[in-house]
Image 1 (spheres, rainbow, N blue to C red):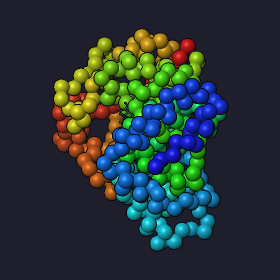
Image 2 (image 1 turned 135 degrees about the vertical axis):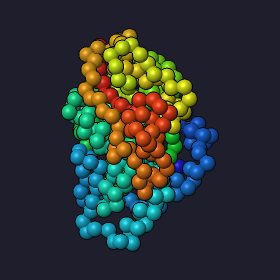
Image 3 (image 1 turned 60 degrees about the vertical axis):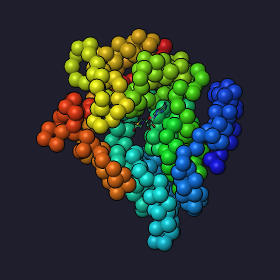
Length: 323
Ligand SMILES: C[S@@+](CC[C@H](N)C(=O)[O-])C[C@H]1O[C@@H](n2cnc3c(N)ncnc32)[C@H](O)[C@@H]1O
């Protein structure tokens, strides 16, 4: 069983204490009724990992742990087998005792694009909505966050996160909860809220922006990353069926539309700090994610188009404040 007790204790005496009115019931329902068919296999992989106390950890420049004396090749092989039992690894990379989890995404590249522009995370309580396996939660801790909380309903990601936690020596400043944003009450408690790669998957983007704002303290910061289309007109691309082979992409706005959505939701000081076309070097098939990846989602004769003929993925990062 995944134990959320440490998290409850952490928030019991914080400005998140009111979350305890609903969270334990939600997570207990999840534990008893909503487990994925493969959860026993995933849980076994996490449980079979050794509890390690690294002598070196770096979460500031990457997610890396090492140990002196080094682990034996037999120990490393066992650890790698357990980690490979948790594939596909979409977000990374992780460098653990010489094992490199070369995930589908170079998530470190996105982090490097955003970190110069956001308010310092030092001593902040932060929320990462749609956090995947929690790669960025570790980077938030590395950047000084007091507490980094991630939400993601995809259960494999929780087991990947707990595996990494174990290999990082049981670090407790980051926590991943297997729930969706819609299950959050209005917490008004986070200094920074991240929503990266989520908005274009939401059927109701303005409601999503309101939900994010509801989690921020007054003067808190939103870091929003999403797909955009080029152009300064008030246009939104609504893909007919799939976008880059994804069935669940609903709205891809121009920067100008996204600015007005943020304004409509009451955000201020809105800035677009980065615009970047996703490359097949940043998102690609690896031995840790052997399914199709971006190269197969693009028109093979023209990488500026998706396989469906839409503009290829461009992602923008917006920073905004709650008044
Ligand atoms: C494209 S991934 C982005 C992952 C990561 N934030 C990043 O930027 O690399 C979108 C994530 O949102 C998660 N997600 C889907 N529905 C969600 C919901 N209702 N609440 C929170 N997260 C959700 C998915 O499981 C997935 O991990």
